[in-house]
Image (tube, rainbow, N blue to C red; front, side):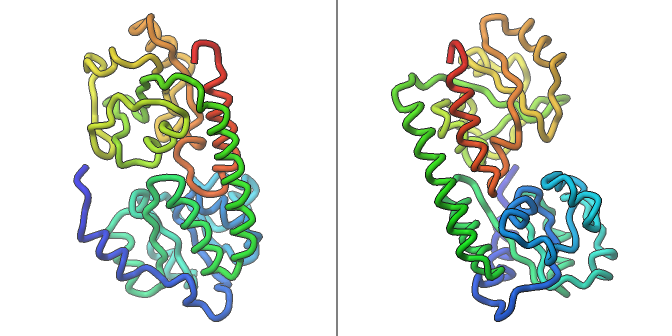
Length: 272
């Protein structure tokens, strides 16, 4: 995938300043699942009026909030009827054409997060924007603490080569410029596809898979199953194959509180 610099320019033009709301917005629609969970952790239950069908945390919001479609195909007409004060979007998760259409009528806050540091900045900025700065800073402190604990846990472990697969038919992996890649580094894992960008298609005959000691099959966006794991293990009997919780590697909001202990536990598995 080629980076769309025009879209990034659009993002910078639409981006709402963290201090642009004199009073907290009372009607928020989130098109980003990890940020939906973050809104909940910031105590914004009443202010959130719409989420996507993929916003599965917190679970009760799926029944309580209006679902506005998916991340790639939001219901534009429904959103227009809801007349939100603010829409949360993400450069990677949402489509350029949808953001352009929504930005004609509404304030859209677009993020581009590719590592834990930018995730921490995003949390602080969103907290400031929504008049929840103290809550956001408190979350950030917890995430930093968990990150430091993970570092202490893995700093003496040998780095091992790994392949992280996110899709099947065709198989797809992650390049160096993704949040998942940055979380692999946090786990002390060397991405064998680190010379690639974004989410390249690969074939199981790719020689770089032979370099990997560990193959991670993500639970999202493609829901790799135990059967997939067994099939992969049959093809690569000398590799360790693990079903990885995709949320822990790709959700960059408050989920990071659970993500760092998760990757620490992963590295404590036998053979890793």
